[in-house]
Length: 321
Length: 280
Image (cartoon, rainbow over all chains, first blue to last red; front, side, top):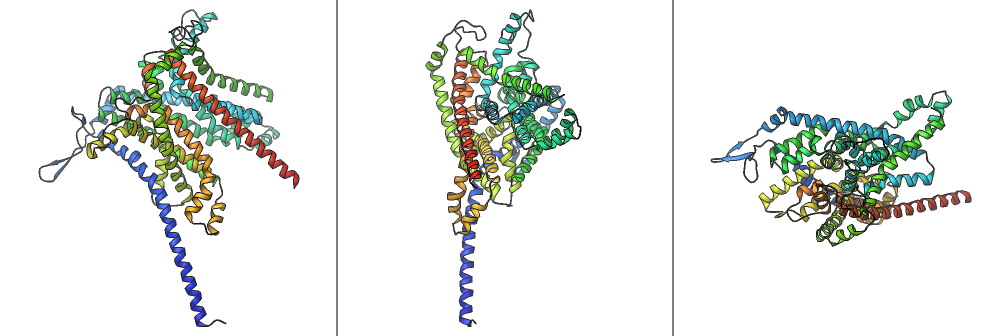
């Protein structure tokens, strides 16, 4: 039996606990805010804001001045704001065959490269998953190793291999297969080789992660039920590893579309790619508004694949939780 | 296709793929010992290009600048990326979460030309309005590198945290540990390997970047990739082959050592598990 005084004491105790709890929550929230606000602010300033700047400049006119474009907002007389938005740069891109062709050419090159990476990467990932423990470890290491070396130097390596007087031509001539060197460097072929060479690990790794999780008993079941290996592959294995195929393809397709180094070093002037046009427009022609418009147009081209990638990434993280 | 044919197909694809990845690198190394100045023509064995490389002051300056940028970048990116990863996995829903997670994963797939261009325009605009950065170089390149490196760190931390149950953190909290204490005593040690991996990745990404650095760099700030590019642009250079050989050697030693340690740890863990299983 409790007296009113005792009851009061309990509620006071209760109140104390409650206040303490509130204070702890507040402290925790403070920490949370702090943890969140630092990276958030960094990204807002150095990632998001710059995009709006590019968008803004793409809507300006080129002038010979510093900076070489017209301001978007001008104050005319007493407080009358004059907003100047020009879509000429986009019209220029659309009307000029060079830009349209460059976009199409970039898309074609990145699509074909993605397919080539998939055709090479899938069997490789499959073979790695099926090998024994130690071999698997060594093979994975061999796939990852080039990734830690210099990208630029790996592209450079192909200059010596593909040149007219390069290793491959020398070898083919020495073997008597050809009499005259074949032109390989500064062609589309060289660009495809360069892209597949540098991006195929990005295809193999997500595929490997996906195949590793595959329930191999399903394949045995399919075989037991009389399915031929090819049929099993196309009806069981491939559909189950589709997330890996999509993730790997996007990891190749997206950066390959905007690639600069490979077309510049291996493609020479013969291969049109948008990343190279953007770079030259900005650095050689000093045409900032057009370069910005090219960047925005490239972004529009890639926004769907990028959102798709984000969606898959999000699902992947959730499935872990 | 029967099983035998399938294995032959898989094995030949694998061998072809590995050869495709490694033959060009091996050729780079071989030609670094070429006496002749013209790279693809063999003129006898020589190590003179290593001498040429080591005597070039520009190379040393570029290496030093790149290493400094990479180190500062890796430290900042690891801190920022870890905070971002923590927030994304452990904070549940909060205002602006979609925007935040979008900004974290976008740099992973953003074409470098766009990132480079947009950051340069930002730096130029900032200079106009607040007078900073007064010149482009070390600081601007480092900031640019942190921005994309932290995204990689965040993804690593995110996947590590997501694969881990929250039990330990909750237990510590129930036992009265304050949030900060939970963070320093439980969460951080758990994600430390992820942070190390993130640091190393950020370091390498920074050392490797050419395009973003060329956009945001100013006169006088020549990083190693910018220097290499300016040299290989005009053709093959045996001294660049020598440099490539050194880089490949350092990376190979690092990766093989790390791989060996990981393999041994894994085997040890398997043995331990087996022993525990036998005892019970």
